[in-house]
Length: 171
Image 1 (tube, rainbow, N blue to C red):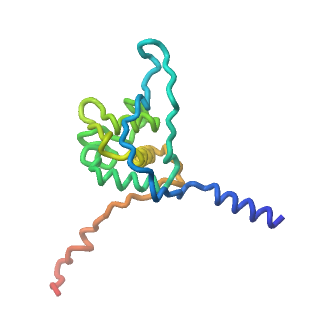
Image 2: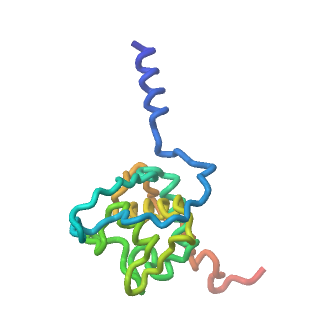
Image 3: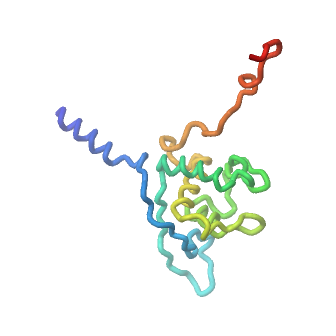
């Protein structure tokens, strides 16, 4: 009985992909995919079959943290602040104009959107776009809590800890 319990625990640990890291991602795939995230089934010529797009970073804590890093690195904070929106729309919301599915977010990043969102396809490797998608979805609690960071990694300065207190002499 004891060996069965140990075996089940080892099997569960081996199946866990929360911290799976792709240390050597495939070479940057800069191809802009077709209509990855469709908004409607309506189209000229009738219904068209479409290949299903996988979401490789789903529930992966490493991908979410890398997406958070890339969000600042590619200056997404310049338009979207830290998800609350600035000159760009907020990323923390219930209703999405183009859809909240991973494929729709991927399309938005790669192809851009009218009135402001630039197209990043050809400038960001595909695996990094998926990491950004994972981070944006984590802002909306669409990723598992176990994979989402509980705090941001931004430096929080306490001005009282840096400045000398009144009456203190400089050393």
